[in-house]
Image (cartoon, each protein chain N blue to C red):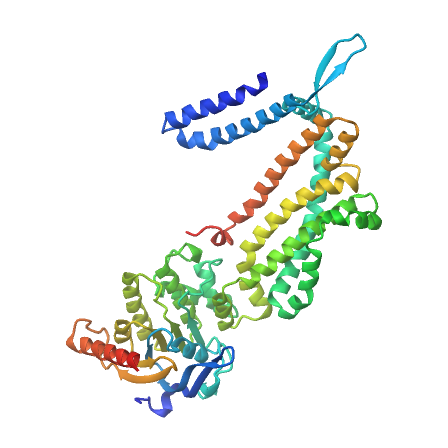
Length: 288
Length: 256
């Protein structure tokens, strides 16, 4: 139970700081509160591990209690091992590479397709039922097809990431066009803008904030799907680490990989959120 | 009906009617509207909301088709929106993703660069937004944004400017400043202005003629010439009398 004590100390310290001093309230709320929440989470994890142990009888008759689940500390140790033996870096790069290519392709194809569907009523009529029919099929359901087409190769995982990101991007893009206030389109037509000019000066910039939101959503989904893809369709990457470690009964490594997935997911989301700060789209994200 | 003489008439509306189809029956929005506007004239369309004044403006602008009747500008029928007659919307229609400069440039994109830049400079100066050229319009105040909308419209040298309650979304002080601003620009450029409003004071201060409309179906109830030189004395008895007259016309048309 000794691990389970320090989170409560953190919370106590947090409470004292938060209510004790107004000057530190801002800093405290930004730093201590999330740390306290994390501490409670970790202690609950530790508590769960303590709850379920199994007895290991040695031949000499001594009994040792072993955790079934990897503890937070074991996970940290295993993470350290993954860093030093190079697997973490190698597999992170492998996963990131697949997401980058698959997501990139989805952006290149999804935005033009979505904009065309949004602007062209006939294209929309033709393609929307197909898109809406394909969209609810989990990318994971495509794994057998992907392997059939591309084998147990990078291409399989990339294809799955592409599929996972494509539909949110297409849907987000045409919805963005559909919700452009008509006053902008009317103004543009009034000034004689047609076709390509209309697209370049009005349709695209007016949709961009919503498209960026769709990209953010799509990247989040892509990052979730990469694990499933790598568990089955390839022999490397963070998803593969999880299957491989499970097969080797190394559950600390499973948890270590999960922690990495979470951390990298936060990083990716932070990175793509930077797009919202571009001058051209700031109007869409803040009501000043 | 106080029409301008035939030879300098700019906008001619004849026997115009508009019916919006609803389930089963039709809603008559405009009925038998005849109106002739002279070149360089400032006409206000005054009426309560729902009297079809915005619909009339949209038809003149080419954004909507009439059910019956015709609109001609310089003798040619209106078939669609055209940069020669620019619409200024109540919600501005100024692009928030573009700077003041780029907003004004939108109608000038086919001009040679030097000429375009000179024009943009001129109109930025005209609306008093020097120093804000690179500012995104989303960062401007409502009044500044409306000035950009007006400058953007003026920059393409239109013959006709159609304004649909352009000051409706502004606070009263800014509204008041904008009225003076619009008058100043109009006196300088002498384009034809059709200005939709439900504000009696606004129409008396701005217009050469006030066209009073009655609702359901939208008809022209009266045309009141405002024969006062600019700048108008807002406290003068004549001004007050005209306001009273318009209020009476409006309440009479309400009662019908």
